[in-house]
Image (cartoon, rainbow, N blue to C red; front, side, top):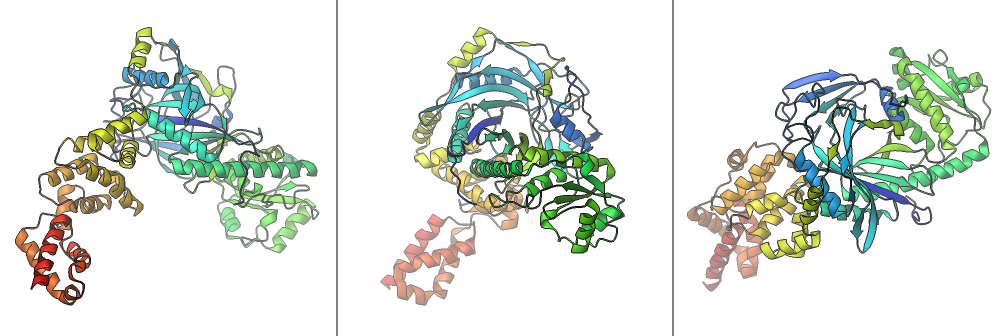
Length: 631
């Protein structure tokens, strides 16, 4: 993509961090916050919109309702109860979660309120069985220090996490209740004019501040970044669900280009005086009955309607690209997909997709179009089609103003896709089942007295305690394995350097090969290191065991050892293998002398795979080669 000057387009970014707290129970019940793939119960719901106290409907909730999806919930009695099912009122607020939120507010120098009120935030995508999320404002103001600068804090909130999405299909969504109700803290930072790389540094600093508490969960899914992005003082776009820091930088860069591109599209549209109303929508089902497009024919067979939207003076505007991949046609396609409608075509891309020139001529003649006019064809079920057409018309009307304020989702390749309109003020209203929660002076004083060491101090402490270099200390502290590392290192026979290297590098490398790290449980890692410490396996075996478990071939350490033949080889057998390999490569030994050890090491380690220590193999080879050279 073309390079862009972020300062010139006045890029502003506001970061929101959602961090799960490491508590023993959920926010409003006694269920344990554990995740499992086994579910003992299933039930279904269909959610509907309800008016706020002021009699208004939230636009985001209204949009979700138009999808008319059936929601299926999967539950496990170990991690959910009647509270998660919305069949019992919430219990008292978890005191530990409250204590952690006060500590985090104190670390950010944020002003804590003496009374906390629980609010309901309307959410009807199915991720909450109640149709709302419980949230409470704990503090406001404060700052985060990043490389000598102070980044303002807007607010710190304590809230429930949402259910975990398992599957999203055309007419149904599946959620697990394991994660629903897990306490999390939301920290909203003030928007700053900056570059994407600096936002990454801000997110890293805030994440490290949270990890310094030792009271937050770690790993994928435990922390999420939402980013509010705007350029040239246009509409603010919220991008949800960024989980990785590298992804954050890409997404801000992409979204800045998308928004600047939409502003350029809007400037062109203003000069064209575009008008579009419902009178420009026509049914062309009969006209397209002989169309050869597979998409159109599939729609007709399912009794769907084919409609066309006429837009005067719009030729070339659907496909106009200020930046590569930034087009109004792409924006409209994303909106339509959310209604479960796949068949949408615009005049700038036709003839194509089986729609030929004769089909286009029929449409142009029927609509009485001239060369500079455009049109958009859409196929779908009657129940969804009108909602989709209304959204398309509104999106084209909004395009004149540049960037519509909306909520978008982050994609794995660093782009964003339309999710829903931005919520309105009517989204939030008081929770009637929970009384206000007092915060007494002693609680605030206790939080101030227990502010933990800073990230820099924590790293220095790890370096000193475990004799690690600064890079490895940072890696292990920033990783999800810190507590696991400390537990393994309680056994003095385990080298902290080796433990940190295995946890931070070896497991990560196996993940990069496409293996599933979630299959490797902490108890598997601990057991493997115990076997190593007791001399039952060489250190070379660890990666082999982890690979077997992460690939799904073995369920536990013992089966991994059996299936991969991992055990400590006795010295006689090892000597026999060494002698045979040296004998088979005697010409190499005569030619290179002790320099042949490197090649022979590779051959031996491949043969003994995980059953002998590399150090012992190297020592024995050196001794045997020296004896041969002497003779």
